[in-house]
Length: 302
Image 1 (cartoon, one colour):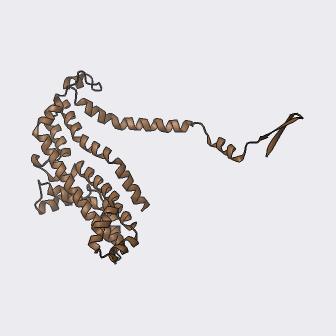
Image 2: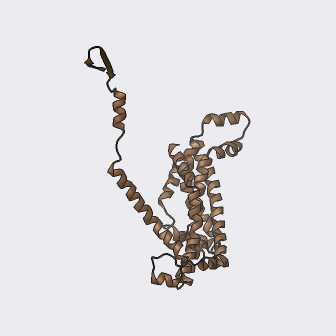
Image 3: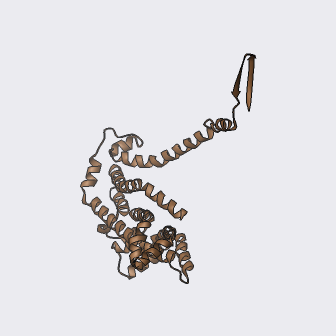
């Protein structure tokens, strides 16, 4: 479609009218709406509300008790690092860090090993009761540890694991398995049957196929469940509270509570101890945040 301009009979100029593509392009350029600004504003407010307590605890550790009493919401003036040095040079903090690390690492290894093997059987084998087994693990998500804390205490006491990290590790593995299996089963189901058949033709056994192929192909999901199990174990408080009564076996969350009770008058030192105890979990989660999201996305797609 063209439009002709005939201001001069000797020369006619033909101008192409705007086509549909150009009109669609102009319609696509919409100005920034006020709703988007409101969404970003609300998001910033929520982030600020979440980070404000963390910042208060960290900055509070650099203050003295007199500064906190005079101006509870103020900044350190001057900055005092003695509270952090007292915590770091004491043996209690590092002993609790070691206990938390042992419990978290062993729990993670147990959850990954048992969860991967159970998920492989559910996802790749045909047998009677497979759906019931998967449903039982899925139902385990509806029963938090808080509901079963009293039976757990009785069982751990009867098997002689009170005041030991083993009494904390075994229940943590059991309660982390439902989430692990729910995440890993879609990964293992998505592995093509052709790869398994080709491996068997080449002489690979079922166990060899599991270790050489399945573990590598399901590695995003394995990393995801490992990170979730590690963080859950590191932050666990209720179970160690019931199982551990000896201060030498305390983990960090339980140690923070004991330290707060012991030094309830020294608020600045308590804030320093609390900030140091939560930093490892924050750093660990921040470093592997993309792994967690990627693993969960893959599980949903699978």
